[in-house]
Image (cartoon, rainbow over all chains, first blue to last red; front, top):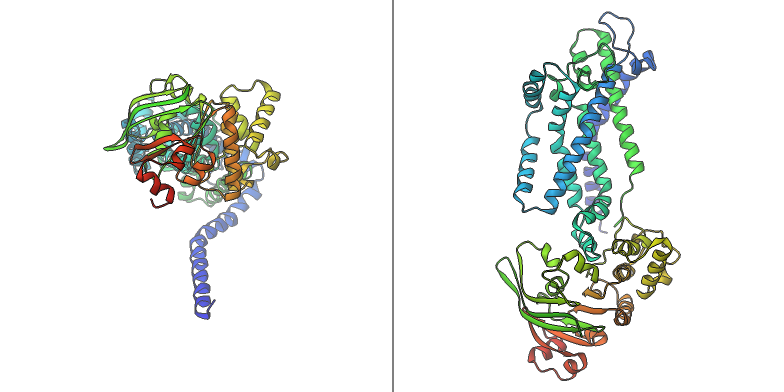
Length: 281
Length: 249
């Protein structure tokens, strides 16, 4: 290799590396700050951070975020299965019957819904669910979360399924597999890694969503709520409220809650990476 | 007795007339080769026989197609495909399944084997028939990404054989593999006619001469010449056939 080409090569590698570092530096900084400020809350409160209720404004103890954790888990349990099922069915429909009017409508609806501001969804669910029911509830929150996360799940499932070369589907037809059998036994297992990432992204979206549930879940922080028709709290809502509050102890709890959110996402991410193997073509 | 009979078959896709009145009779237990230059409609004809043409948006087929005595255009396509296996140009074993499962799945789906023991016997028989048994017998539970392109293609052949189909379609099966593996595959294909009728597409007259009992030369959706392989290769009647065999087209 000539000197000029070698120099150009090194320059290009340096530029790409610098660009990459520039892109990840803010993320890295964010993670470091969350750890740095979140750890004191967790250390001070210990396991109590996961089992106790939040502190009062003038409390000297940090307390915990148990109502928010249970609320987030209830919201996740209510909305994730519905989102995954509908998104999977819709993406299979549009994959198998791309020319069908229903498929086209589903595709357009999913794209349009992705751009609706989540606060608008929250207002709509407030009017359509909370007001007629006469109460805030986890169910209303789940409806809002389904609406905001469905387009993301649909898009990621569709991308995953379309990434499988059609030659494998044909191979399934060659051995007399029926259409749905080919999807279930060949296409979906081949796309499982990407689809697991899609589920993970949807989970992150549901657990981290704030605006969509702002007007509908009721922010119940007086204890652990398990019934879906009752008001609940959620971790991002607690972070939002406590970050805006003028009390130092609330700020401490908010940082601790942010760390819990970050760690839970990282744990699910690592577990998925370890459990779901990539299919080598 | 004919395994496959095509009578005045026309295929339109969108506005294009791809197959223009093809009439062919494929004798049972023979190797029948459809040859012709690329884009002449050979693959489309195969897809008419196993009804994969149904998957092509806007495709319309007319004429009569009988496969093993069944009216293929009116039959349930999945029932038809149980009797008509296919191997495509690109080796496409299922990458998420083991080598064993790639073959066993075809037997399971089509109810060929009852129980694990019988399934194992079918898998071994199909892999031996596809001339790949010796190369994979010690790694049946590995995934096919460890195999070479030619081995993958022979695995696909074993998968098709495990269905115990009576008609086997091959769409340029050696197009993407090396000459050594191509010869092995040709050997395997030639040995299949005791159990099944083979219809193979190729654009190589040399390959057709090596494996065919009968050949048909297809060009622009029409059959230009058809007959016993020896007759067509030694005494071609059509000027186009001569040019095709000389490699001028």
